Length: 66
Image (tube, rainbow, N blue to C red; front, side, top):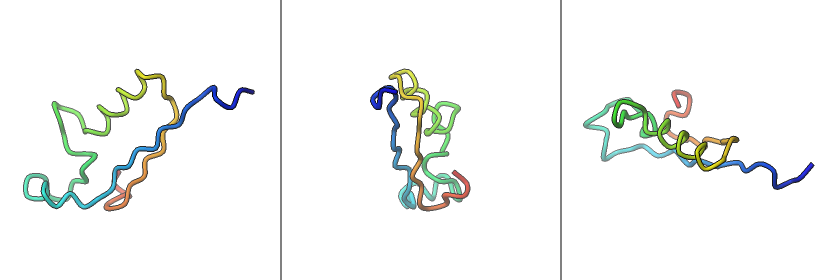
């Protein structure tokens, strides 16, 4: 097995989002809708197009929702 056959993306998606709290209270930053989809979905789709199939989402604030 080639150790370089797959790439894992580490997506840092934590933080309180204090500047966005007024617009989207209670919604973690990665889940805020952007053009009809949560931002993290757009990012994941883009990474898949780049050939990445394994993901680790490192969430801090409200991680249980993400």
